[in-house]
Image (cartoon, rainbow, N blue to C red; front, side, top):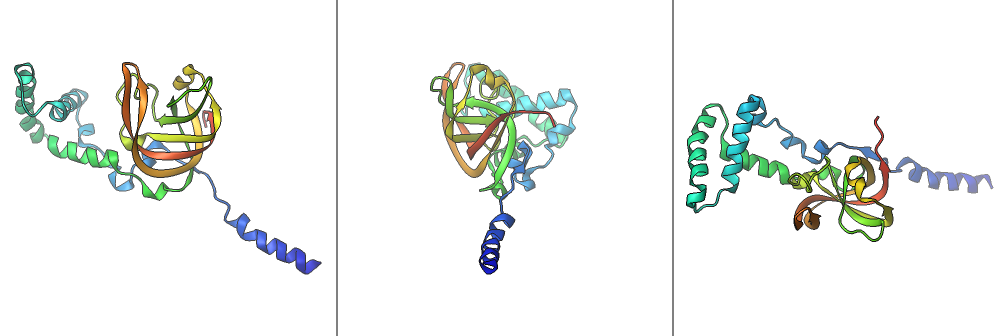
Length: 214
């Protein structure tokens, strides 16, 4: 009898020893460590930052073929870029670095059980319940302000329905589940219609709880 009990205990020990812990993470942890560098724009004064970000925006969004309507903005961009470069701000280099940083995924978290705070945006709403949502780092993301980078958006999928009211999107929550590093896009209802939002992670949701200050 003692031998049988010892055998049972020994069989159980590996299971107990290797029980997977939940890792508390922050949004910056979703960015690979090698890309968690300080943006050179951050070293500028607030006025200079505003100017640099405006020129970066123009560089990324002005069409290749400039019309009379865009000519003034194009001239401003062309005149300002050399001045910024003298201050160590290479606009094209910053854009390229940001694109890599914002789309790169932290594979060290792939398959891990994690706990992350954020704000919930429902992807589909059945009555007062949801099963799929986007988890974003700040209130109003994708709704009142542009979406965060793909590696700062998590697509949550829950096997069990989650109680939800529309005002809940303005309340911080804590989500626990298994994270998968997987790029994709989801269709989200926006204030002016629907649109595709690029995502970097998917989470198999285990729990959604109200956020409590630690």
